[in-house]
Image (cartoon, rainbow, N blue to C red):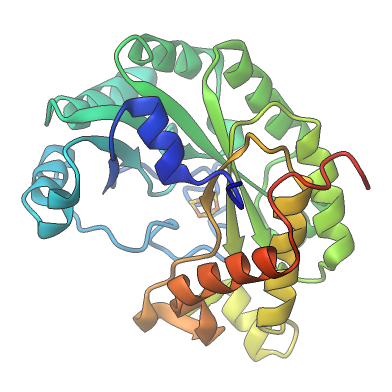
Length: 302
Ligand code: SF4
């Protein structure tokens, strides 16, 4: 039995063969950055908009640069991933223009992945994605981070539970897959918050999950909290236990897109273990195996 529902296996089944992601910056901003809701952004967000590894180029050139890189040689088909800031935050004609630019850059692109915020989802956007669904596998990544909206006040995310649920409803209605992002190690949160968050998402129709370790990036508000002694770096043991709890309590068919964060070393304040992505995954899998655990074993049980 598989320990958890791995993204690479899911993609192989869904899309027929190994599929890699092309991460692009669509040149979007975010309502939590441009003053619509706030100018400060979420307290953990770097001014690169949560996508840490992208160069400034046209969308088409970003796709071509990736396809010409040695990394691209590991597969022959790709997902176009709009990663930075809120990639559905623009008038619908601009969205279509930018998505088309990326999708038309290569006939090897078979899927479209859009990372955005719940308050940037509306019927018009979902209808546009529905059109793309005729040719591509399309999914949307939405940050939830936690279901505790008191924590959201500290995080300065500036979206509400109702806005999140409304976005899920719209995407569900248009049969667009949803990948939810959760964060472990948020300020003031305990394992009880993780449990409540899992109860919350277990009552939602979503298809994928990204689990992030909270890490401190230089010059963010979280960095200030840390320097002022108001935030402690996430403990590795706590993280492993929290991830095990999450995996064992979610539905078996949820696809696991990520098991930890992925910071750039030069931006990272800590914790340092976040840099060792493979080790984190190995330790999670080892712990699952040693305890005869697997995804969904306790789903609906406590
Ligand atoms: S919603 Fe995303 S891009 Fe916007 S401030 Fe928060 S983390 Fe950054």
